[in-house]
Image 1 (cartoon, rainbow, N blue to C red):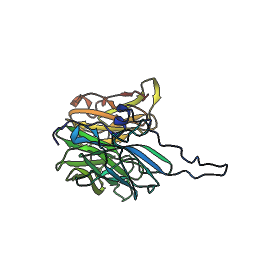
Image 2: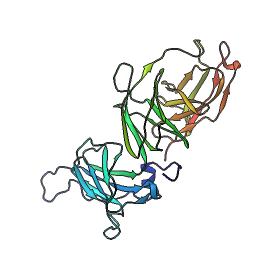
Image 3: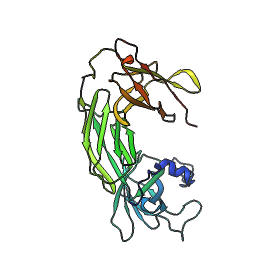
Image 4: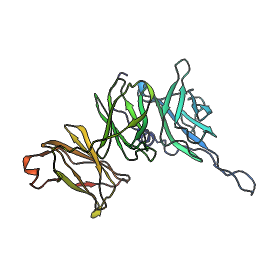
Length: 310
């Protein structure tokens, strides 16, 4: 790829391009007065990352065993923009699309969430980028929900939180062989992946539990509370708090019922990233942990206030 700039996410592109209101026709509104069954309708748009995210005309999109061709400028209209597609009766549960541009090799592109019964209208498929997906397993072999997964590239870090099935999808990853890290509490894993254009499924990543603390101690050296910026009395429970040292993720935890979190780390320079559904991502900014914050002294207190999404 010519540019190494990070690209917007699919959902960001939808709103930037005014695609959030694409028409999909009436769903489950057949004629007559009898009951109708809602169809599975998948609609979206195909863009080309190698050409400034321009819409891709005349590409065949195959999702869940059903296919459609993206609209060209000659047959597009207000309800069906250039590069858009609409597929009926795709297999529920499908999460990848095969996109074939005439005269070019096919590419497999993943998307989230997977196809569900009814209308799926927010899918943007971007060809000529790298994607990495898979599943994170806890040390006991069960899917690890809410695990933190990240890849560090030449232009920064790309991260995601696993869903209830332990699955994740990292998008806009540059081609190469970066290291992927996954963590949940004291358990973590590191895996080198070979990223190519299209979707790279790396399968299962198994976490290994490491109960060792560094340095050995019983008290936290970093503590804090996550609150709602509109009401400081609202403590946010179950929020993911990611600890980075020199911009490299070293540990992650979740807030307790009172919005509190803690880490036991040695002296150094750190930063916190806080991720919560319904809120903008929070960032503590860089702070330094010194000997004054190590036991038996009081820990470093770093509170983070999150701004609700509007």
